[in-house]
Image (cartoon, rainbow, N blue to C red; front, side, top):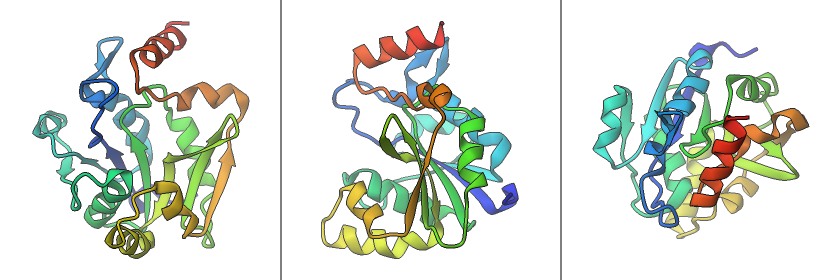
Length: 194
């Protein structure tokens, strides 16, 4: 198992949240902001945590915050910004809108780190989850060159890297639920309160 001193946690909290109409990292589940769930899942597994966001309100979490190097360019730019600020080879990237994520799920990704893969992403319900994934620092060059060509699709960026998916056991599939709408927020609350 890779030592936590070689892993940084990076939380992407810079999205527009246009469908939700508010910053998703500050949505509450059981009186706790979404981003805190990501922080709590990462804490036991990483040496430090970086939040990528232009919103200074995230400074209340007393973690290193970096802003997007390339503005309005989506998660590819957010990942680049986080990796530029990271000093470790391996980085767990999480979006701020998956409040049911657990350390146990992230440990499965860490257990599957191998030298041949640059991106190790969770797969849940047949879908790859590029924002619940480990990225090796050396993807920066690939991602940056795609951004220079105005390519902003994360799946395209990953397809230019050596990647593999870790299929989650059915009992963990609920942990990857993300929230973009009020209906999805209600669904997450229903699962949480079960």
